[in-house]
Length: 229
Image 1 (cartoon, rainbow, N blue to C red):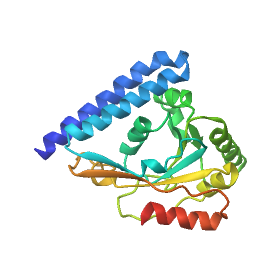
Image 2: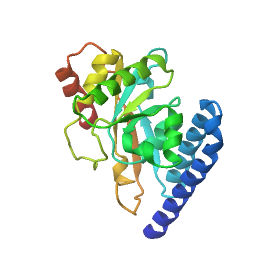
Image 3: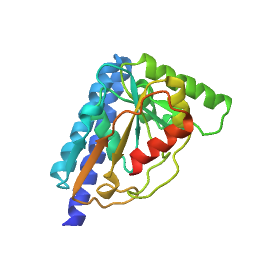
Image 4: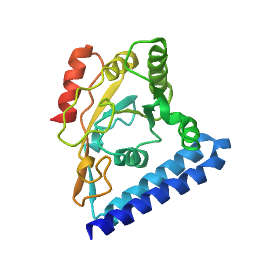
């Protein structure tokens, strides 16, 4: 039963993602809102699959901590592809910071470029990285959509503690807006690099904003505590 449930779920999510990408192609020449709507619908579809195929509830905590009338960015734990779909569903057309290599993937790369996603190459302070920081801070302050960054740098197992990438502190310092930490456990249900999906409960918790003005070290310490503890 576990194998069959995982098989059906994987088939449903892969097919949904594939057909969404095909449907997105005509929106490349339309206003960005058309593709944003499609990304949101895919997010709701994935939430539906999680709930009714693998019998898992997604519980949201701290939604009241998401600012409604000011700029902010989200720094989230990253355990699974699940949270990327969920954020598209519940937030207002979020802009993700992603690995620059993703823009090279045919079709998918075109779509995320249209959505305004921002590619990053590395943590080193190079000319490209400085341009990335400028572009990120500009996106936070100009766009109506929230920006999402995964400061762990890659997907990790639940309860695995890895040092956060310091690039998030440079974004915090440069943008001068509040940061909303997100703690989650999606890896328990939808683990990285595994065929199997496990029933249970997913929680996604939006913590209280870290207000601008902290020095970089204090910010990193506070963010790490909020994401892990």
